[in-house]
Image (cartoon, rainbow, N blue to C red; front, side):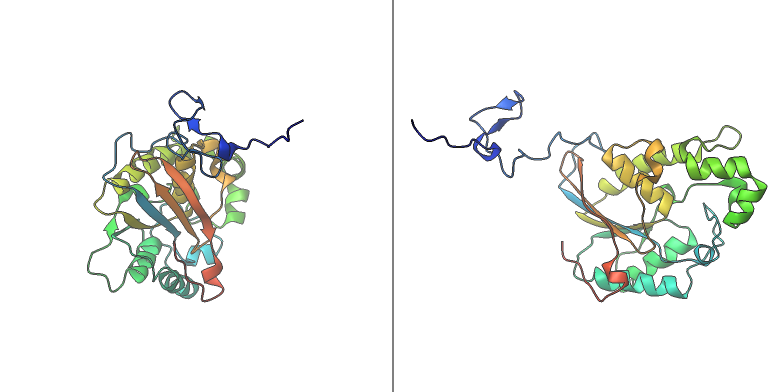
Amino acid sequence: MGSRVPLTTTQLPFNPIAGTIGNDALVAGGAYNYSKATTSLTQKLLSSPKQVTLVRHGLSSWNDENRIQGSSNLSILNEAGIMQAERCKKALADIHFDQCFSSPISRAKSTAEIMWAGRKEPVIFLDTLKEAHLFYLEGMKNDDAKRIYPKEYTTWRQDPSNFNVDGVYPIRQLWDTAKIAWKEILFSPGDNFLVVTHKSILRALICTALGLTPKRFRAVDVNNGGITVFKFNVEGEPMLQSLNMTAHLYTDHTYVY
């Protein structure tokens, strides 16, 4: 009897049109490529493949005081947050960015300005990168909000996609805003972008790229100063490269990607 040779996926070229194994394409690493494997965020071809680095702002005064921030502009970057922003800048010093986009809200704006200092191009502020509006909860300490508005606070924490005020659903709206923000960024001139913004909108950006609904809002977490990287092919289809990298906040680590 002749010996049997195991047939692996690397020996079975995949025909992406027929959706079957064929002889007219090569398989690398068990996958054809990631075209059509994810959903386009742009619905139109991009001028070139893109890379987007997402950064959450540094620690702020209301982070430190355990207050609900939302869209308020009263929370400012504190001393620890300034240090985190400087560490982010150093960690990404070897990465070339064509443009920097930021929320215009103070704590993100200050982080972006620290990270982008020394560049000729100005920071571009996008309203679509603003944080979710949380109405009367904004500025309240979490313990107080839980005591005074137990129903609303519990919904915000445990079922955020259904948190609403007078029929307005902030997290559901955030998903729509995130989709607009992605298009504004990806259709901008350049190939490599830096984006500085807030935790909730970052969750929305990440989840919309991954095809997750508002019900999965708390499925991902992003630390102050955390760095997330996406790559996009020309069809606007995203691939998550790195999520919430934080090594640079504790060491002198620098990234090359």
